[in-house]
Image (cartoon, rainbow, N blue to C red; front, top):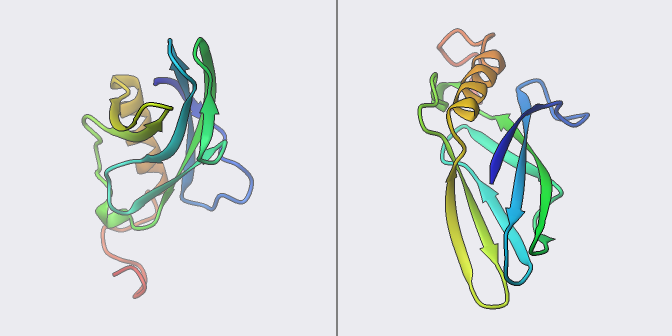
Length: 131
């Protein structure tokens, strides 16, 4: 899994959403099905395009757009040091969860996107539903 760069969020994603493009490459073996993609931060959810589950054949690469949605600014990190994505992969032999650290460019892009998404927050919850 390789970080490509920022991507425009899909229409209707909401005001505190942002997207990134990653590339999933399958070097060899049977085709791989991605059954789940997640990230570790509370207050941040994600969706993928294509939606999980999706398959990628050996010797192929697939572009995935990951859209993140900030649900609570008070719980996301101000500076994402070593952010990673957890990806659950399945093939004919096994199911495996792998954590991918996508590098410094991803960490910087994620930190910037989180700051922009939460820039209107005052550090305190703005409404009572954010508990």
